[in-house]
Image (cartoon, rainbow over all chains, first blue to last red; front, side, top):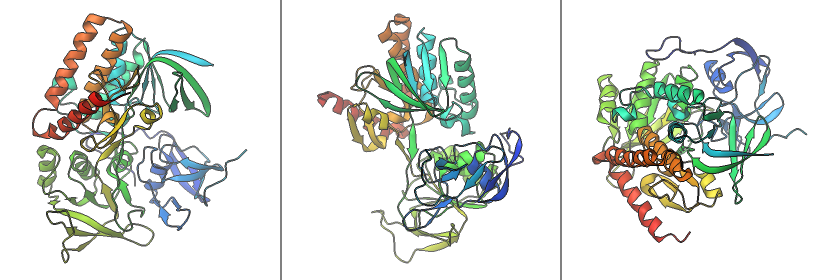
Length: 102
Length: 366
């Protein structure tokens, strides 16, 4: 859920766009990070751990911790907490370590 | 191609911006490298009002202090800010490398001020990796920068300033804050923040901690328990509390990797919350020309980070020969302000930590 009213802050969210999460359309705004847009849509499980396959969510939200790695437009290990939403972006849960494209 | 730079500031948060303001104000040319897409560091999400004196922007909200500093530095003829730029290394030959837009950049600065800040600490308990368990700063980012309601029902761990402030900010965002649990016997943060929470009906439970979290694929609740005076769980005191979010505000630790990598003399100082570069009275590390200011050299408040930045900035100006007489006076004024900020009972820990740094500096061979 997005905050519509706040006692101190006003949010300039940018332009409304649509991207996909595991193939499903999700609404986002161009000034939002992918992680924020997914949270607003109620999606908090962003991936699974490599060895024990445990669910992974966001932890630091400022690009430090690597808990939120996802594959974006085919590129693995993208920190979705510091990557902005773009129209038509394909965001998918990453399997394993991901393969860096040539 | 290697770009020559006079003063390179690494990190555009409160310390870095104030360092740039000081050095550029004295006449030096400054380049700030910031890894985020906007400068301001953690000030961009701090909606609470600051303490201290007028010189430290007391009474203003962190977010507005950040905006003011960013605007001033953006318009300053001697300052350039490069965002989305992550510094990768500081090398023996004085070259600093950075990544921007998948380009590998190289700089050769005369002076470097490392102002990389801090990262949130984690807490060990079963199922601490469930989605729904966040650093308090992460929730603050989602809420105050992202404009997203971060939780429906939250428990905060830690009654230091961050735990108290973020709990209150969650109330402002319409989140049900169940309680704040604090392992220590006392509230660590300022009483004014604690009082605001208590007036809103949020209990602050000292001597309590999280024993474990539970949930199927996501956080559904936690088991809390009481601690004895040796910080050990008291059997039979466990209670189960349902929540969809757990916030950890259990302290910060310096992001000092670049100082390590640059070969600075590092020491573990418990009171400063981790490994820190050993600095001198001008905040210069053991490596000539590399300074460290703000949380990277010991965890404190943003107010002291700003003053440290100013101190380092003016010290660099003096060493480069800019406006020496005035800059030297400003260095001394900043030192005096830091003494003032660190006085009183709340500053005891930091004073003890800095005394250890001074001791290590005396005995350092590098």
